Length: 608
Ligand code: G6P
Image (cartoon, rainbow, N blue to C red; front, side, top):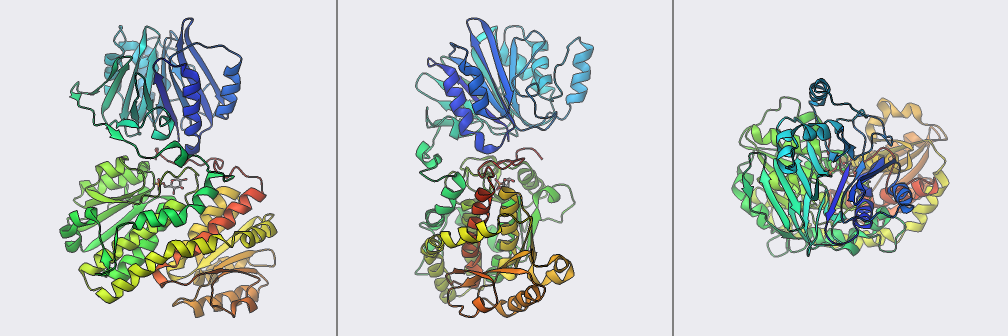
């Protein structure tokens, strides 16, 4: 999704802006651009393609500048092209705007501005912002931006630079994240802290409806209604090293291998071995609401939605509360039945996914208590929810979510135990569960040690065009997640199904060319899965089975076997998903795919 960086200070701005853009590459983008004020005027360079291409373009010019804004674009209106890349300019070529989000009334505004004599160069919604600001600009950039934004409907994180206000940046937020970095005599803005951490760890998150006016002397935050806001400065504890690849070939691989640590961090201090329950001040704050809840809704998108499905099974089993899982994008536009006894959880790694946020707002509007399960601290969902719990997975850069998924699932497990112990779950069973949770990181480590055999299987099947993933019970959502990982990064068509549903369609696809991954661990549905394996084998399908360490039989039935350690049924997804992440990863590498930045995908989808 689009990335924004801005800088004002004493250093050369271009290298800082380009470095910032590179830190935002993981969000997904199709073009990049920069605007800077130099002694020769307003310099603009923009280019379809990678930030490195923009860098090469700039390498020839000796640009001397200490103020600028830069952008990576992920197309929403207008194809990816040099022209449609940001920054966009007004008629006079003196005001430059970069923008993340969607201006919904841009056609009306465009018609109005054309009537006033403005001419447009691009198909983008963003360009109208530059012209609208030009309309109101008389030397006061902040005020012109404020008036322009009061006419805009839609979402934005944006930054504006004007040649006639040469030492000012104005930025604003409504619906798309924006953060201000407070450095020592230098100030930055960015859509993500990753872009400014090299310069400062002191940041202020802008809220919706706020503008920031930045000069060499500092910054002032005001609202669209001209109220001044006292900035709340937060110190970020993530350092750059945590965001770097740490010796791995890809962020995704690094993040897969971080899971023993990220799982430990997710449960750190939260397991109460003595009482067989979960300690969490954030859950405790909502104790009464959770006790009264007669229905729970879990909502998210993509991988977070898969984590929610596992959460549904966990909470219903341990706490006996009815749970529904909703695609956030569907929930927001239907007419869900909600009352004050409904507890609505938003599950989101980034905390910024537009649909998840909108669904949460809808649930809140209808009277539900809304709680967040987020990774990014201070993200919009985390801020706007009535409470919630962080998963503490650390920054996840690879577009395909891995460690955030397992952390989400384990945190949903913690919530299930917490709710269960307030209801019918016994202390003994609680103790058994928290001990099993505590063993997970070490078990994940053991699975990671088997990476070479998984790599071999991946190489063996890297030329296939189709894959099927089948699981039952707790591992049905894992089958969905395994298929999603594979299609996301290796572009192989893959489908996940509940194994028994195979008979109702997918079985028609099975022949000697179709690899079928079965999650066939020794759980309550083991016998049923074995029958499903037979059904595939008798149609000459290729069976790759994920099996329990103690399963001595499976080798007689499956063509390939990947073993995983044993745990309680409801925790098995935390182990079975690991080989599937590795399988997708090695498959994508073997096929020469751009693992961390898969085509057409974005890490954080901040438009609906
Ligand atoms: C995008 C990402 C996925 C992620 C989904 C939801 O599609 O590529 O990896 O699962 O968004 O993101 P969230 O940040 O809300 O978990």
